[in-house]
Image 1 (cartoon, rainbow, N blue to C red):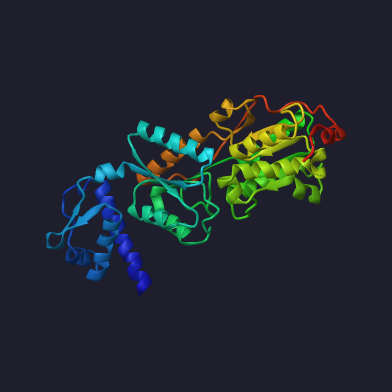
Image 2 (cartoon, rainbow, N blue to C red; image 1 turned 90 degrees about the vertical axis):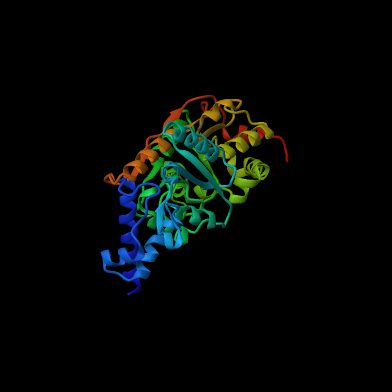
Length: 376
């Protein structure tokens, strides 16, 4: 009985929401009473009360005791407020996404509420999802359980949530990701054309539950397996715990120096870095060990953004086109909220190779690698 009651109250709240969105119930107007709803739908008053409470929790109506329940006067403003949920980790790609969302939202006459989520803190996201405003989630932070309360909340959110650069199994909500298989292969192919065979992968972590990262690592392994055996692929996939990638760039720099100094790196002539921060640390580590970029070591930056033009030298990389991610996410959200759910909720964005100055032809041999760097 509990399950039937719960589903019934959701049906009632969804139908009332439809009347509000269609303008049949306007701001300031009174909704049917609990007694009237109970009679209309053939349910107990408690079920009708839960339906009205659900709309109140989502910020759509105000309950005024004996005066009844009214549609909020500021509903239109609230309905045009987008909530952006993203990790509090200071990744440059997150900052770029926030900038693009703010820009696109202004173009479409949306206000924006940005919520940065701290590690192991799902509460702000859960509360935001209850409100019912259009919501975008950038990434699927690895510190959040992929099968916990947050995923259930997203699945239940229906038409007002879109994911960018992160996926949930089955794509239950609008989802936009980069075509990472194409992008990683594009990066490796470009390095191969320059003569590089053994290409190390510098990754923020190797969490198999991270939907996007797992595809990137798997594609790299497929692309280099003809020149690296299983042991070499394990040694040349340099992964960092999230604390290094997010909170201690200097630690990443120091660990990469050790990697470059180690004997196993002698045959590596190119580094494929999956974030701007890792590319920054890799470039600094190469310089610290006396290896010129790109003459002695080539560096390819995945997740390239226009910021990458500002470094010295400007970085060659793969542009995932975050601007297109955001534009498509807005389009999907608006279609779904208008009741025009498109067929297939997952969209892939085609990446683009950006050629700048950190990739050059392989000009040195392995013995020269050992001779290039100073001692510890």
